[in-house]
Image 1: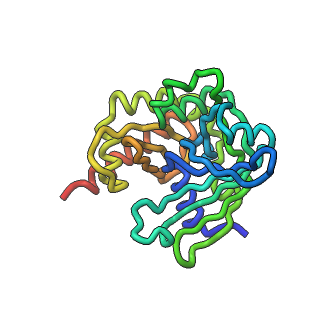
Image 2: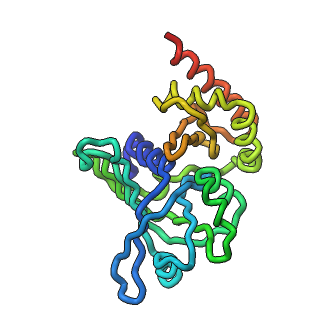
Image 3: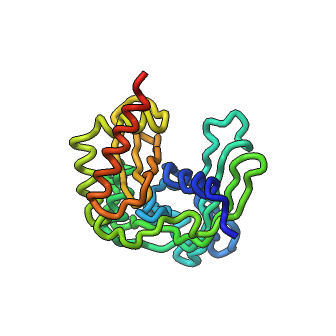
Length: 242
């Protein structure tokens, strides 16, 4: 049975906003659970991406057994953490070699450029099989991968143009991105930047603060993206006006 749309949307937003998570792998050779901290981004579809070294214990574990989970904790601002949102993602960890995954991760974590090309480091993705979401009292639900992932069908033109769209927005429309953050998400003032765009929305960041801007309509082409980004700017200006 599909999750309620609002719960699935909350879970997707939690993944898109996350800069870090707890990776659970199966320790070698005991098979006991082993938890470790990793930094996160997402691919265009919304699956978690991470950059890890073969020197790390969790990487050795995943090479031996790729079954893994990632806990995303969204309770930082909650007075009672047990009333805040958290999400456990489960699936199979796999190495990825695409330029898009590399670019999206480094846009989220530019400091990782210092070591991303070291021979012991590689990019990985958690191929989602399911998730368990807790959003506070009475909001506990199991989610399917389809509840969390964005369909990329028909969006080839958008994905091909994504690097140029992101660069153009950051170079020429930084003021609009900052306006999105303040007026549409309640973010703090500052040099916000766009880190990615997909058919359902775009991701922006200021340091370790990530925000998700959802689109009113599904975006499949650069032209669609331009129209929606202009519409969002108009909405943000109207919201910001006294």
